[in-house]
Length: 106
Image 1 (cartoon, rainbow, N blue to C red):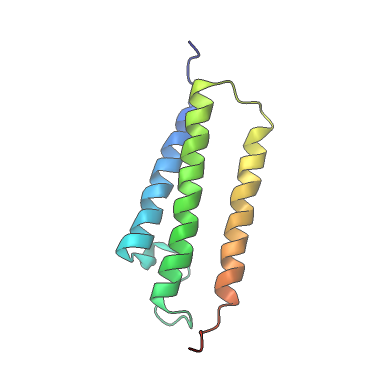
Image 2 (tube, rainbow, N blue to C red; image 1 turned 180 degrees about the horizontal axis):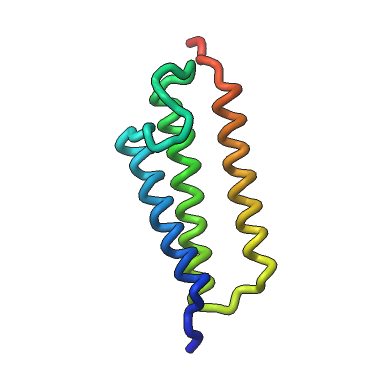
């Protein structure tokens, strides 16, 4: 049996904490957990709660899953930067979507 590395435990712990934070933002409306967001923003709370909550929750689940994979198999060293790059791209996508949000006219 492969013994889990310390890196796998770090990914598991970080993924679990980020997933919990994402769930709190998405389902409980805890937008105060988001740095730089307050009630003076032109984007309404429910939009930020949906967009940012989904992103943070998705990142947390992906990181936790990567930690599970790293704990049961030998993960090549080049996968760590790929996961980190995917996280950065997802966060940049969220920032872009929030900065270009316009109200829907219905």
